[in-house]
Amino acid sequence: MSLKTIIAILAFMFAFYIQLLGMLNLMPLLLTTPLLFIVLLLIVYSYNNRRRFRGFHRN
Image 1 (cartoon, rainbow, N blue to C red):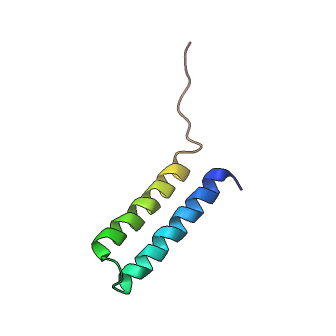
Image 2: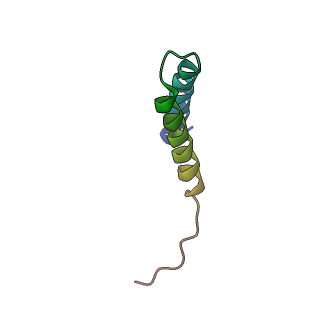
């Protein structure tokens, strides 16, 4: 596993834990839901952009 994957997993676990605290009314859901969404968005964006053909470059 690469470092990027480990960081993504840890960020998701942290955001999910904070979301659970929000569902238990220990933290405001107004803060925890966007945090989880942003973490998931960054994970999907980073893994979607990995092996994209960017065309031929002329030098």
